[in-house]
Image (cartoon, rainbow, N blue to C red):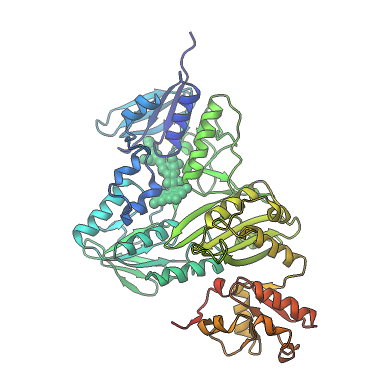
Length: 567
Ligand SMILES: Cc1cc2nc3c(=O)[nH]c(=O)nc-3n(C[C@H](O)[C@H](O)[C@H](O)COP(=O)(O)OP(=O)(O)OC[C@H]3O[C@@H](n4cnc5c(N)ncnc54)[C@H](O)[C@@H]3O)c2cc1C
């Protein structure tokens, strides 16, 4: 009788359990063991901010199946058929002898475990900035269940009230909301001059910043934390510009891949960290696989194929499936990532897929962009909410390269369509033509994503002369005599407007009659609420011989600077 295939999986949170569970479904006879140095396995770290916010009462619910069964080692043994060793650390890999050295963290006993196939799913570790005071009490990294549990307990028992969040990535955006909703005073400190610098272009980040500030979050952008001070516990966060009183700090400044085991075993790793894998998640040793936050992925889009480290649970699970498939003899490669991410920041959905404009510029790509804003469903429905979409496309190939979406409307479905379009290499024309479902409670007849593609095509075809908000602001700052043509109705104008003396208000319906009020020898920036009418004004003026006319993309809804409002 052939001996059973022995598979060892190191790491027990996302990629590890996914690999082991699928493998047992595909190869019921395989002898599969998962090794985890922590005490708890298979938990939803992504749910931690929502536990802190108080959306569910017990952090252990993150370890449960949808029907409330706890995913303990016994559960995995009984229900899934593989062995789980918790509090067991893999110390090193002997790839020649095909064994790993493990240590029982309770007894300190060590032994060698043989394998036929090894899976490294050791994840990533939060980066710890090398600053004084980082080890004081009341500094948290929200990574494991225990972190969130102790944070909530300390807030309640010690009455902690002033939180400083170090780093403005998506985890601290979610934590900002959670802590504000718990009644804390929240300041976010970020070294870059915008929030979510790896995720959003500045124009889109500024819209989220406005939203955060409206919700009471203080932002200290462009400030580097130099020290955390206090007598045994956090009392103040020092930046290069100020000292912020605090009684707790949350550090979320990035993740470093846990690739030490692989490096020590001589497996190929990227210079900046991360195990290098092929499309079946095999490392440079074909008997050793790796997946999840410990590997570098490949950016997938039609033009660049640069390696990218985007540690996400969505990818970790897909890697797990790919690994199990390949071990079981199914050839279904993992095609890489487009860097899709989405998060909730108070009432805003914030999402990104593909390439940002900034990255395109760094890579010297010839791209065109468009910012669109509008409702996610027809305005007459009470649930209609605004969305702002930014698209980046290759001028030469007219292919979609990247999309960023922010706003209160349903951005996640548009983001997922955009991710699919980029994944399959769609052109802008194809995106405009996808047969998407339409009924008023779900979208306008032409979906916002398709409309944004149309705006971009109109720009590329020289029909629409749109100018992005930041470029418009630059013109306003530099040109004293620029005309800001507001083409909204008098009612809209009464309620909200650009606080600028150069605004000329001519409703679109009156523009043809009053065209002689406008000079042809000055730059005109037309706008409305979302800039559909702004665009039409540009076309009307062009037809009347005005050449120096642009419309401000996204209108007032996408305007990241101050606007004057009646109330
Ligand atoms: C607060 C928060 C919110 C998040 N939200 C999202 C989200 O909304 N969407 C999303 O896609 N992702 C999100 N993520 C990221 C997601 O949780 C991770 O990408 C995912 O957990 C990675 O899974 P993994 O299995 O690769 O690694 P990990 O989850 O890091 O697990 C690796 C495990 O390996 C163990 N290990 C390491 N070395 C050894 C060793 N030598 N021996 C034994 N065991 C070892 C570790 O103890 C660890 O438990 C979030 C993360 C956090 C912290």
